[in-house]
Image 1 (cartoon, rainbow, N blue to C red):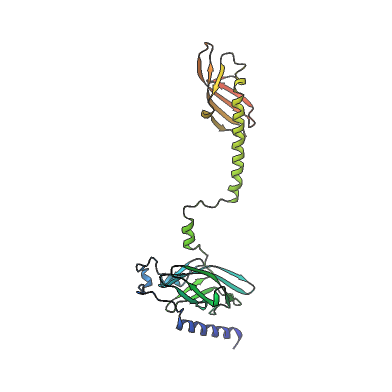
Image 2 (cartoon, rainbow, N blue to C red):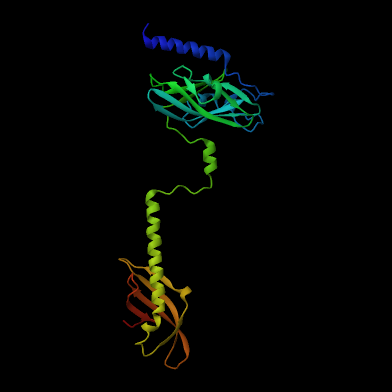
Length: 276
C-alpha cells in the first residue's frame, strides 16, 4: 500500500467517524423544518441553505443549518499548509463545535486558533478564527460535516464577498480609482486658478473701460458672471455691468471677454459691439 492510498484510507476513516458523531451541535427546540430544499425560515429569521447549493459553495459564501451557520471567508496557502478563515454564527442556542467538523482532503485540521480546538459560539453571536491543514496534496475542497448534511466549499470557484459585508457597504460611496483620485486635484487646481484669474479680471474691469469714450464703468456683480473654459486654455467671461452712457444715466451693458488662463484679456465686446 503506497503512501497516498494509506492517507486516503485514513482520511475515509476520519470522515466516517465524523459522519457518525456529527458536530454535536445544540439542537434548537422546536426544530426548524428539515426540508432545506424549500428554503424555509421557520420563523427564525434565517433561511436554510438549499441542499444542492451546499454541494458547491464558493469562498465567502455561507452554509446555513438549523442550529448555526458557517462561512469560509478566505483561504491562504503557504509552506505546505492550507489555512481557512472561518466565521461560525450561532442561532438561538449557544454552540460548542469541534474544529474537526471541517475537513481538507478528508483530514481534520492540524492546528487552529480556537481554544482547545473547540469553536465556542454564544447564542446569536459569531466566532471567528482559523483552521490550518496539511496541504501536501493541494486539496481543492473543504468539507463541513453537520452530521445529517455536509457543506462543501469548492476552492476552484471564484470567491465572493459575504452577504453581510455587502449589506454593510450599501449606501456607501464606491472606492475611487487611482486615476480618479489623481484627476480630482488637477480639476481643483484648474478651478482655483480660473477663480483667481476672474477675480483679478473683475478688479481690473474699470481699466478696460478707460479708453471707451461712450461708456463709463460703474460696478459689476461678481455673482452673475458666466465663465466658460476655452479649448487650449483660457476662458470666456460674460456678465452684465453697470455703466453710465453719454447722457450720464446709469444703464446695464453686457460685457463679453475672451481671456487667457492668466487673466490677460485678448478680446472685449460690449452689447455686441467689438471693442478690441
